[in-house]
Image 1 (cartoon, rainbow, N blue to C red):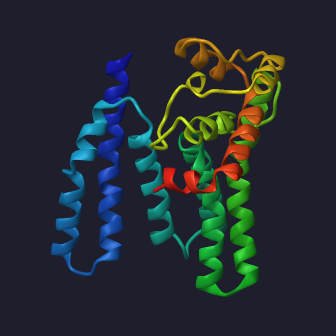
Image 2 (cartoon, rainbow, N blue to C red; image 1 turned 90 degrees about the vertical axis):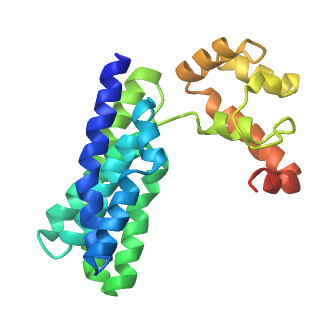
Length: 238
């Protein structure tokens, strides 16, 4: 129920606070500064408001805080298992926020710069990837069984790229795809994979949730538009 989800948000938000305190305690030397930053974070409007929102923000902050704490406090102890667990948590975090799939690479790069020891960095990298793949492989198998196409987390990247980058979008924000004038050739490509273009927003949403093959077609059209309109593309990101 909605109430249960909101209670879950409150629990996750509460569990985040001690990890934030530990992070602050490691970053700052003065306890007064630590407590000040901790209190400011705890009572930030965003933290309070998102408890009432059924989104992924609260859970992702909790997971990310745990990962940062593991980096700050467990770096010298249980090195291999530490990074395997970190990789596993990053995998779960990626299911919540897919752009965190790139985070293992970021961590490997940071440790390479910090330690300047390729052998240790390689061990860290392998450990992270092992933990990460423990989440990604089952997720990919599940998606293949459900949609007939192998992808680790989400297949709507092409659709999102298309609706955010077109001649009708002036702010780079979400909009319905059917509002974008499209060629008959493009519409036919979508029909060939079972996606009807000229439909109402509810039908479009339903199709997007169930059709894993339309994403590549949307992505191709979006990239074509970006190449043809570089100035507009840059302005949408500003």
